[in-house]
Amino acid sequence: AALGLAGAVMQGLTRNPLADPGLLGVNTGAACAVVAATVLLGTRSLHAVVWWALLGAAVAVVVVYLLGGRGAGRSGPEGLVLAGVAVTAVLGAVVSGLGVLDADAYGTLRMWSVGTLAGRELPVLWEVSPFLVVGAGLALAVAPALDAFALGDEAGRALGVNPGRVRLLGTLATVLLGGAATAAIGPVGFIGLVAPHVARLLSGPDHRRLMPYAILIGAGLLVVADIVGRVVARPAEIQVGIVTAFVGAPVLIWLIGRGRRAAARKAVTAA
Image (cartoon, rainbow, N blue to C red; front, side, top):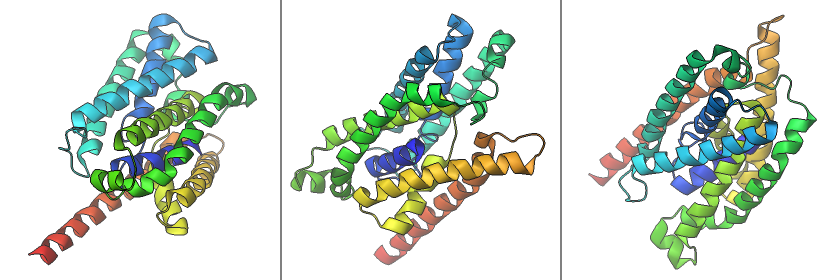
């Protein structure tokens, strides 16, 4: 649910249909910070893990925004995604390197590091729930502004929207939602990419209606992916993060192709 909502906010903020907490480094940043704290500092406390995840998510988002050049208006629809892919690759390599440094410590996170619902009980939910509630509140608060924001910064200002404030609150919501979700179940990708698109088909573009749909669809996709992972490989289990990657990667390729075809049609029409 948190990942679906975070994806809806991020797509609205960036006006980029390819935006997703996983693709823009939030999930991997959180995971990298947790693994680093566990391997290098011996962190085991769930409370500490949550805070490290939030810190890692925040740092990753800042780096992606800087590399993508969003603030200077240099990035196209795929600019942030390319920066996110680069940051995610680097952080993934760091996680692998840390695993080599201390295989025993990393072994305690091996299942978590690919995304799993196994062993996730109520204490985990209670630990992350304050961050999820605050993140969801911020996301829903900026929902009306995101509709005006979709028209561009200048049009948004004309409608009374402060773009800087919307970006700040929306990014904070994404970090809280994505970081807390990653701390709870590990870095699960593509839920935040797929859920908003399905929600948009059902609810339309109005973010006040889209976000509740994204919450429900994100939760549903995660549960379905977990069931598929448990059934397909019985008596073993495929982790939920692996299942979502198998489904989400083709969706990402299709969205990129659709965006390029739309751009080509616009170019032909303009000519």
